[in-house]
Length: 486
Ligand SMILES: [Ca+2]
Ligand SMILES: [Ca+2]
Image (cartoon, rainbow, N blue to C red; front, side):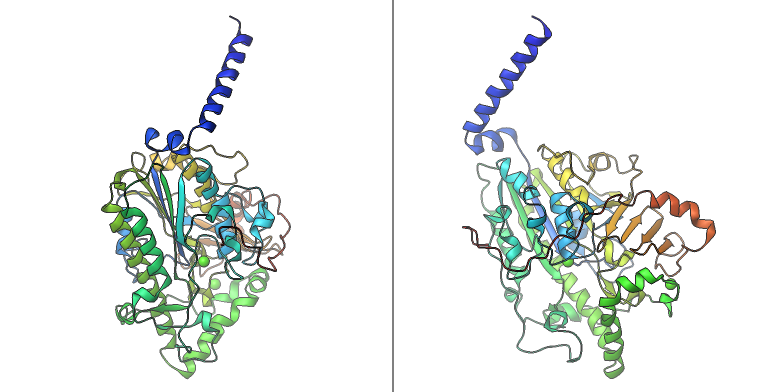
């Protein structure tokens, strides 16, 4: 038999196998027969790095995140792909950077920008998984419009955001109801995150079905409004304030001032509030800490359910935050910046049989890696066009060779490159910042104009994107409801 015959026979066998797989019920093709792992996919909103998970000296306690990390690998230098909900989540859930999709803003119509790109959830649906979940997975505005997508056909309906009857922070001149903070609600059962966690607890508590499960858990806190029941605030009575340097902005380039123009008022407003009502700034910081603890506790309920489930030892758990948050560091409150605090995130991967319990990886990674990594972990086909890089070598060996830095983009043509030691930022106008994290973890001293660092800048600049997609249009109207009604 010659080699052409062999190729033809192989083709015929593959064809026959494809027909058999297509004709089989999904459960027979994938689930118990193959021992496919379940996936618990947890995403939190705006959780920064001032947490005990990432820094034992940090004041915000995250014991449940720490116990999760003990089961797998903690990435100590993980970064979002973009410091805003929509572009960050789209990049993580599609594996495509903003510079590829044109999704740069919170209002960009991501599905319009990449109509045929399968999300992580759609890949798992195609592989026969039971894909469901609750809470915030993609960003949404216009009453959940961004969720009108095949990815969410079996998800719980989003609970609408609720507010107390009036603002609570005592500063009527500061922001809107959406930037408010205070003690609310009285009962944890009245929060969206409680319901999201309860949905996941129920899903994990049931007997395993015929198909493997992909369970998504989208926790809203600590995103604004910074509401949590009173006891969560009281736990941080003694919390201090983040480190700041007077006149920190004096060495920033014009590009930074231009990018930050729209969000400057948050910090300036906070200074004014503090002048009128001393202690308001600390109340605000306390409220953010309270909301972070609240998120941690709800995640703990989900982990308890996993621990009590027969799925426990065959479930891949991913936990990540869509970006970080500034609490006044660098005279900035909000995300929407290319500095460390807005981009550095908690990221944990528990992959039974792959990650070593309690391991830690210090290599810089960004969340475009989620897509190829998760598909590879579950043996699903990956797409060659993906911008992210598979983290499997690092999951197996946290010290494996890894030359690649993390790359972040905020609005078109503004990027940050983060290596193990340096953060290099280049703005749309070409102006730059460079920070040495070994000597200056607060990013107070911009070294970009110092000739001695031209080699460092060159070695980081080469990682900047070479093409930048045009900004895709915003979603102006709610998409028509799908049959699933999301
Ligand atoms: Ca967010
Ligand atoms: Ca400075």
